[in-house]
Each structure stands twice: as C-alpha cells, then as structure tokens.
Length: 195
Image (cartoon, rainbow, N blue to C red; front, side, top):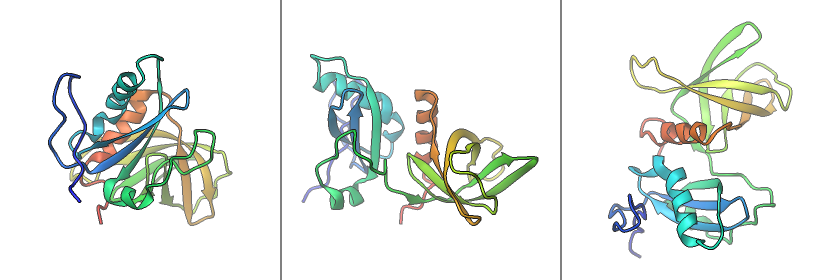
C-alpha cells in the first residue's frame, strides 16, 4: 500500500505538497460537517487555517466555520479507521503521546515546575502532589526542552482529574491563535516522543 501524501496547498490552484503525510486530521465544522485530510510534519502548524480553507472549498454552498480538529499520527490513525462519531457524541479529542517537556503552574503562593507525562491536542497530564478540585481553572506554562531557552507557551486549562500524584487537565482556548500556538509548539520534533 503506497504512503499517503500531504494535501496542503498554499493557494487553491497549487499542486498538493509532495511530502509523505505524517498526520491525519479529522475536521468538524460548527454545523456538524466532517471531512479528513493529511498533512506532513512541515505543514501541521498550518492545520487550523488550512482546515478552514478545505471546509470552504468542499462545502461552497454553505458558510462553514471550523469548530475542531482531531489530529492523529497517521500510523495510529490507520488502526482506528471507524466512522467518525457525530459532533454530539462524547469522545477523546485526540490520542495522547508521551511528552518530552516540562510545565509550570502557580497554585496558591507556590510556583511549581514538573514533568509533563502525556499530551494531546485536547489536554495534558503531569505529575503533581497538589489535589485540585475538579473544574479548577489553571494556567500552565509549557516549557520547551531547548537548552537556554527562556520562552514558554501559556495555556488556560480546566482540571479534570487530580489524585495527589497525577493531574489531568483539558485545554480551554480563548482564541484560534491560542490553539495554533499550542499546535505549533507540539509539532516541534523535540516536544513529543515519536516512538
């Protein structure tokens, strides 16, 4: 079976990117329309804007606004080729991958730095001895594992699980820019384990 190719195009009249696809994206619009496309590692950071463009091209008769993207590594996605559930069904937004970066958060008067355990495009889990109430809003700073880097990515989250050992939170995006910033961070080759 031949490898799937990236479908990214800078302009509608351009030919698709010839690179081998690494990610499968499942797009869902605000009206419930769904479609899929493939992207390579180089273009995954453009998933949101490209997804909106694809929706506009595929459904020209109705104005479609992109509501969510489910992003999967293509090798794993092939094992899960089931009909996508409707937008009203509960589902995990994307599979989790092992994280290779740290997170920091301020809780009470303490600033805590800890190791992220796993991450997806819908949430993150990390080690913590703090017991948060479910529903607590928590601002995290994702710290790239780049030597001497002083940059960080702030993300708003909501605590979904906290047992005194591990905290699992769901991302809460205020703007599309916040979502794109996170996707760009996670697309960096040193942020996630590819094994």
